Image 1 (tube, one colour):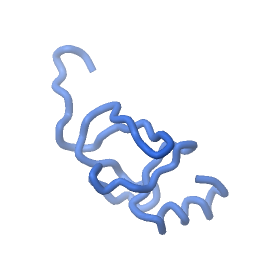
Image 2 (cartoon, rainbow, N blue to C red):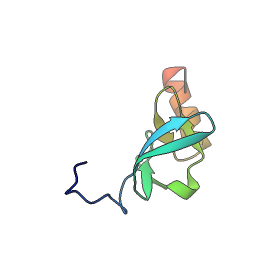
Image 3 (cartoon, rainbow, N blue to C red):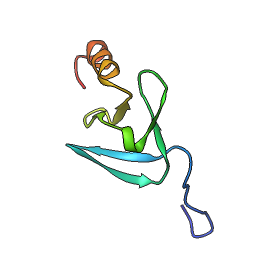
Image 4 (spheres, rainbow, N blue to C red):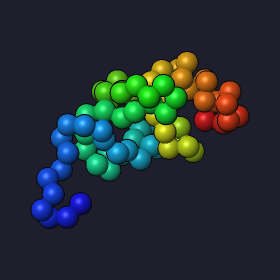
Length: 72
């Protein structure tokens, strides 16, 4: 982002997923589930993969990804 660009306040956030937490790299109000494509409000985000750097809408989506790849 350069000096002339305004930071996004609405829209999709860019996160760095860490163990037990995440870091907001670019502000926004939601992320997209890697399995379902559903929008996940940041306040409701509970499931993600540190290794794959992707978010999941719920435990079922996380389990589905694990079944597909053998890792989360």
